[in-house]
Image 1 (tube, one colour):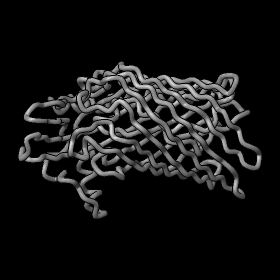
Image 2 (cartoon, rainbow, N blue to C red):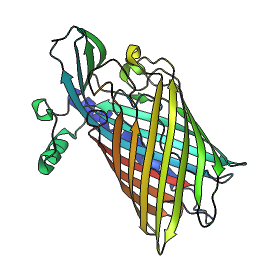
Image 3 (tube, rainbow, N blue to C red):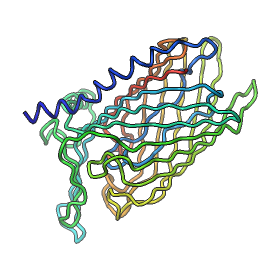
Image 4 (cartoon, one colour):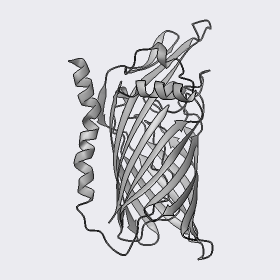
Length: 351
């Protein structure tokens, strides 16, 4: 019975997605714009003790035209396994065990305003459980000679997030859960347009993350986070193809959180870099690097006190003049600082 209930919770967001996404296609296709297939992936680090903060996505170098609205529904499946134990050999002993799968459905919209301004909002729904991907990931790693990180020493599809220090459990989340995450408000101002020959665009971005998620279940952090960043991008034709690059750099300030608060840093730096190639009107291929500094200090474990870098590869499909589906596969470049694998699906529609 418990297994059945866990699976019901695990697929709850899939069912929600199936109800929400078709609604985006009920709106008429407007003919005076075309959605870009070379936009950044709307993703960030989904590591269990990092995703609770307001780490922003790479922003566009341009903002929407006044009155235009982009709606987005993003489903991400992140599978994590990290474990380390110093064996209690030191005076300040610690151990960490992070084994679980997260399903994150984010519903977002952004609105173009006069004077090169833009505002937006994102509402995430999160489910965490043992999931079902452990066996697939272990077989995939074995097939390509990648390390499994002791995955095969533990039962598959179990859920446990624990961090112990001096025999005290500072983090102990072992029951499947689901609920509202931390809502984020966003704003942007495009301050540079470029020229026809060099169409580089740049914008300031700001985001405010509110503590609406349950921090006891790692659905949120309990902190209010403010992030500021500068984003730039250049999308240009090369023959019958289109190429693009985009980049972002910024910093985030966080009030005191409820998650490992005594080790939490208040400032985090972050950055992104992406490249895209669109060989066909309906298809693009993209690669994106995302990184950030450490969120916690005072630990000798990479899983807790270390910066992170991850890579997302994939592309976008055009489903209509103003509708696109982004598909990506993410891997942790800095091992044990990000999920082992992330499956990313994002449906965007320009109204």
